[in-house]
Every structure is written in C-alpha cells, then in structure tokens.
Length: 91
Image (cartoon, rainbow, N blue to C red; front, side, top):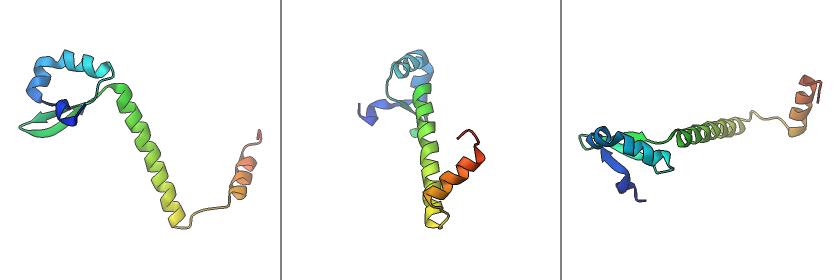
C-alpha cells in the first residue's frame, strides 16, 4: 500500500482509534499520524515495533564492529577462540 494511504490526521485517530488498532494489529502497515499537517507519530503494532528495535540493535553492533576494525582493534580469530575457552571451563 502506498505510504500516502497510511497518513491520517490526529482527529482521525481520535475518532477511529479502535478501527486503527484493529487494522494495524491484523498485520496492517504502520500509520503516520499528522498534527497541523506535519507528521508527528507512527502507530504500529507491538510485534513490528519489537522487530524494528531488534534490527536497530543489530545494526548498532555492526557499526561498532566496523569502527573497531577501522581503528585496528582486532585480534586473530584463533586468539579470540582460545581466550574464550580459557574463560569457560565447560568448553
């Protein structure tokens, strides 16, 4: 569905909250809420929100790893594995 079809004014949210919640809860697309013609919020179901947060966390870890590589903060894989084995007697 085009993004333009998912934009609603805050007055629509106030008058149709139950319908909007049902729509997004049934796997619908997020809805952009506007106030005075400006986008102010995004309404989405909890599962989609959690997936977004997990994705952002993974992307942050990847970015930090990329920064470590660029700064030369790396160790050979064998050395890292040996270090982990020394810490975990069950391994």
